[in-house]
Image (cartoon, rainbow, N blue to C red; front, side):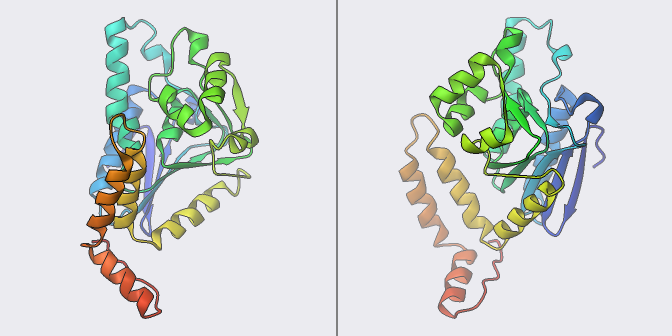
Length: 260
């Protein structure tokens, strides 16, 4: 499918999704959110896609925020609808995506941009990256999951400080806060993302989907993550990947997972 605001390229099982509004520092507008949802929906059904790498175009920004001009005149009800629709169609959709999603943060990740990066399963960053949730400086709060995911990643106190001050942290501080897993140079960021994706693809993607569901369950109100883990663990025993993985281990050979 042809898109106006994003680029997609699939190679050897890895789908690269690039937000391509570099003149706007890749700011998220409604059209871009819709296109990202469509790209992820297609990837979900495409058996050739095993891992997704999400990044921004250019050298300045992953996503510098939401397009404020689109909602500056919204009513309270329109604001609630904006947050609910965005979370359902993109941010929660990515967080619960059954295939691994790596966010390669190449520059500014602010507001909705940081919220999108936090929705990915984990993040890596270039050393020029800067991250923050500046919404309170506009008289609003993060509305795409920021008040929920940031405390999960960095802890309540640090999240409170970041949100209340509306300040930015650099890549090394983000690494110290456990907001990102790795920091590298801007030039080496795509290669690091690729290396991590290739490592993931050596394993059972069926099992990884179960692990994603189990990990996410721990953060759902009223859901017992241990029970979900037990269920997913048991389910794995009925998969072809389990048969292949155990057979390969016992026969001292490399596993060739069928993905079933």
